[in-house]
Length: 361
Image (cartoon, rainbow, N blue to C red; front, side, top):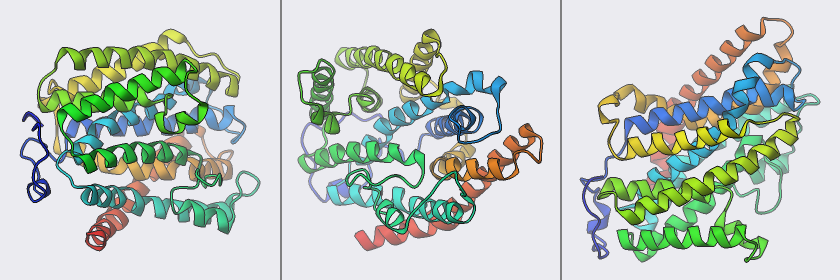
């Protein structure tokens, strides 16, 4: 990730070989993924569950802080901007699609089926699910046909899928530094037009103005890592940060209305600034000495943990919440979900992903 980008599209045969400047993993980013996942888990278990009336086990003391944990999704999107462009940097369209399908679907299929099964057996009045809903959810395109998610957290996958389509288009025309820069400035301009009401609301299906600044900033930081930080990249990051803070304050107000709480604007703005600062430090190599092998293993658990934790956790909290100490329940639940995530990674993702790659290749 240190070599300057080529100005011309590499020959097709050369684009199949991994670039020596693009490492497969950055351990610190994997550790940051775990932080993001755990913040979302705690947001659901210790705040949104009881504040939203889904569960009856309150965590008022913790909830005063963990109610900001939804910002872990913002962090996920910024990391995604970085790593997805990194994965596409030397890829053909077919290789990019293959890598994304193999990465996303094995754990997702398991999570949909496991969540549906537990919902049918133990969901009671908390959640309902139908066979048709499950089948449509298995495609990961349920938002297109307006079918409800089997689990509330799946909404972020539709945002990711639309981002992947943009990267896929880049792989078709050839991924170069100048082309990516053009896309980033164009995307940010479209974001401003949507926010100003100068484009129809339907345009936001593609622009994703609520979170586009995170994807753009992550991609910009990858370009900085590949070559060097330039003033256009620096200006792009500053503009993305400003828009991220602006939209985060509006989003926090909406979340506050949903749960009848007030979010501190300074805390929200500070959290967004920290997200940008930490990802920038990692991208620019300032944290390289902190990287450890265990971080890669921890990062591998974050996706199945994110997919599995919400509805399964809510159901278990309601089933045993009044029978045990609530904090013991919280620790046991986080540990159990983490263990399940490891099992899914070990016995679902690792064996199934290579099969998908070979099939699609």
